[in-house]
Length: 429
Image (cartoon, rainbow, N blue to C red; front, side, top):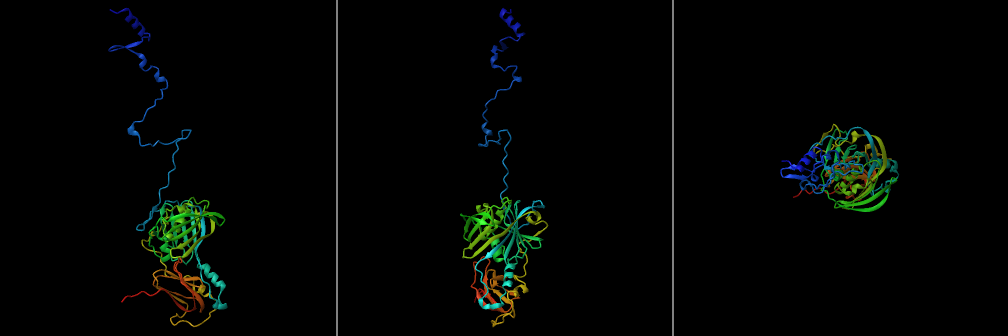
């Protein structure tokens, strides 16, 4: 029998006004159930703790700005890798086209060079000596691109590599590529090779060290403010003067790396973060001295990027070789003869050649021979070099190495002459 209350409830269900609903055990309160209108109202924001198994130690995801845009960090360039000498290099991905660059005319400079003897008299040709000094200057042309490339051209015959040979380098690698003068071949020079190349015409790599770095004030070179720094190692002391040359985007570090190799310091040194070297003074561990200086800066808009590729396009690799160089004579016969306005015959030594100069190097290192302070030839270790052209007369004759660590005392001698440096090898008993 249906009670009066139950009947009233049934009537109210049809009208949607019942305060509860039936369950297996009777009635429950509807305040704990979701509203039938919840699907059209915004859901409340809940604070949910992330599950521990998804926490990665604190990485908070990608940050965003006030407008909700993701702030993606710029991709850092990969760290440079050292070149290796036992394999060909892959092609340079740099697009071959014209573009902006900076060209530096530079030179290495020797100190305390002797002059002609006072006893030489009026036959000394000042014009001929000046011309010979210009021809044998240790000059370089350095092209630097904001794309992270460098090309160094040996613009003088006085280096122990052929004139117009090139060094190329990239910010992507440590080390250099030596390109043959005709551009058809190259050889990889691993980090630490440049000192031996210039001093001995060898591709031996020195062990590089971190060295020590200290600041040394500032100055001006070619109208640009510079920062000075001193880098020291067991091989010597290098005083760098660097400037911020507009438009290079850090490529000046490539020239700095090259100079650091002269004292066997690693290319990773923070010394190369201060700009482009415009001047450097090298003092070797034996007291020798060599200067590097930039004499002009030219900004260009049309440098072919094909001249900067590392390695050059279409070239072959020469494993273990250097560009061929038949002789180390630095002046032509006419240029050597122009050191004097006329011949001045005199008494010569019994071992003198019939004419000119016979240079004999009995040391273990490459040596230069100079007449009146002008380098006329470099001579390989335990070898001879015949120089034709100098007229008979009195000259100041001297020997030296590239870095100035071994500089012989100048002597006044009559040409023709056989000049010897060092002592002969001991053949043993």
